[in-house]
Structure formats: structure tokens, C-alpha cells
Length: 224
Length: 223
Image 1 (cartoon, rainbow over the protein chains, first blue to last red):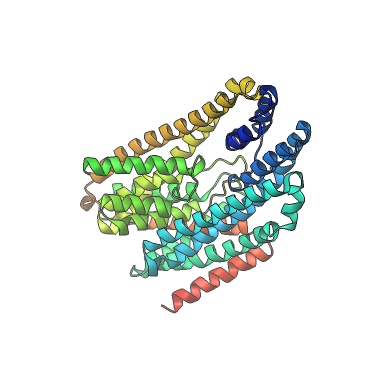
Image 2: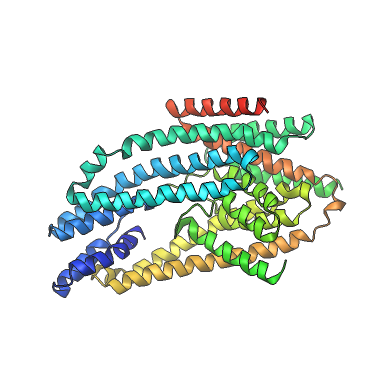
């Protein structure tokens, strides 16, 4: 559906570009714009801009299709590193760590910060695509994106790491020492199981949590 | 729950479901956001925030890259936030987990079904798309969005039904009910720790994870 999305996003730009050309040329451009494509959604604008610029420069259709194919991998990889493994856990981790002091205001912080960054990134991607056209691949390599994508993941690791003890403290303060010890013990057990070679893909944090909850529900129900 | 409250929760649930993948992907479907707002609608922001924090621990274990299949914590968090708001104050976390975790698994299944339906729809219109029919592209977009809205509506209705049932549980009759809190919290902490260690890999990222953990511990000790 990413290819369809790019086609839909490019449609108004292509409509203007091909307003005075034949129907066959316009339809061929629309078909090219909607071919299979995959990338991180926030960086798809790079492809939209580059394709429209290439169409405007009257680059042969086959070269435009090759450009889209060539952009898929890098835009997907860079976007995943920068956003899903970087910016999102960074913002969420910082918000969780700030919650004991900022309360529900952290929710506003998450929404505002993320959407400001996201809108800026989308606009930047569209701009660089429109400016560079066929040369967008080299332009991306020269840009700030690869270096920041790598650093974003380290920043995210720090933020999430910082949030773990703070959230545990916030939710366990005031409880008996035995309860706190039990929770931390189960946390370490679950993490160990999930990461062990024995569990591999079968055990996830969610499945471990559900198993614990099921066991707790049984105890609560039986020992009334 | 009043009728305006239920309508508001349904609308929020649908928006959150669509936000996850379709649009706008503005992190409204993150548990921290979805559950807190749901709690606010239901009349208890603090309880919604607690539900959001705990479910966010599970959600941080998820990396939605490639063709991975993952739970949908969005609408599940809406239901969990409401359930926490309606539960006794000291059971907010446990009730949120009881409602939210199974609904998150179900949400993930519906997400996978949605993708397959979108693929079937695309195959049916592929010839028209390849012929450059812009209307076919618009139909695919529109129908994809409509399917996701329907998915969100279904999950939200189911979530509200579950919340209504859970709200009727006589929690006073279960003296050990606080175990649900600790089970939910322990699972969440193990999920976020395992997820951080797994995605930390080796080298710089793992070192920064260690620095973060140490920083968090120092902050806690200073309180």
C-alpha cells in the first residue's frame, strides 16, 4: 500500500505537470507513481518529491522506476533507525522518566514534540526530493540523516534505560519490601526468559506478562 | 458511563486505531497517550495515566519494522484507561492489564487481517492501477481507510463491552486482587528491559543503555 500511497500523494503534482500533455503520457506517469514501493512513512516524501522532479525533468520512465526501487531499501532502513528505533523510544522514554514530576503533562509533551519533528522531517524529505530528483540518493548520503539516525538509537537506549528504574520506583513506592522484591525478581526472570536461546521467538514480554496475569487471576479467584 | 462519554470513547478509540498505521501516525496510539486521554474522558486522568504507563512498558518491547507482526496497544489502551478509571483506586494497574493485554493481542490479529484484506483489494484493482487509472488509486486509499475505521470501531465496541463487564466485578470479595497489579507491572518491566537489551545490541547502544539505567537509579536514590 506504500506504493499506492506515493501514487495518491503524487497525483495532484502530476495533474499540474501533465495538464497540457496527452492522456496516455499522464496515465503512464500515474502508473509509474503507484508501482510497488516500500519505505518508512515519514521519509516517503523523499520518493514523492524525487519522482515528481524526475517527471518534470522528463527523465525516461524506466529510469524513474529504477529510482523508486533504489530508494526503497535506504528510506526504509534509515527511517526505521531514525524513527522507530530512535526518536519514538527516545521521546517515550523521556516522557516516562518525567512522569513522576510532570504527571499527565508528559502526554502533551509527547504529542507536541513528536508531531513537530515528524512534520519537519516529512517537509524536509519532500523538499530534498523535489530539489535533487535523480541525485537524491547521493544527497541523502551527504545529509545529516545517516549520522543522526545512528545517534538517535543510542539516545533512545539511554532514555529507555533511565525510565526503567524511575517507573519501577514510581509504581512500587510505599509497597512492602517483599512485594517489591517479588516484582523485581519476576522482571529479571521474564527478561532472562525472553532473551534466552531456549525461548527464542516463542516468549515475548507480552506473553510473559499474560502468563503472570493468568497465574495471578487464578490465585486471586481461588484464594478468596 | 453516560452516553456522551461512550460516544467520545468510541470516537477516540477509532482515531487511535487508525493512527497506528493508516494516518496520521502522530503517536496518539501510544498507550501513554491513548490511555491517559481515555481516563480523562472517563473522569480519572490519574488512573488513565497509570494504565498508560504500564502498557507503555509492554509497547516499548515492540519494533514495528518490516513485515513484523505486533500487538495493537492503541485501542487496547483506550479500554484499559477506562477500566482503570472505573476500578477501585488501588487496582488501576491490575485491571488495566487484565483488560488491555488480551485486547492488544486481539488488536494485533485484526491488524494482520486488515493487511491481507488490503492486499486482496489491491490485487483486484491492479490492472486499473497499472493502466494509470487515478480513480483506482483513490478507491484503494479510501477503502483501506474505511477498513481501518471499521476495525477501530469493532475493537472499541468490544473494549467497551469488556470494560462494562469488568466494572461489575465485586473487587471487595477478592482480598488478594492487588496481585493483579504486581503481575501486570512485573510483566511490563520485564518486557521493556528485554526489549531494551535486545535492541541495544552490542557496542555503543548497549553502553548508553547502561548509562541510562545508572542515571535512573541515581535519580531514584536521590529522592
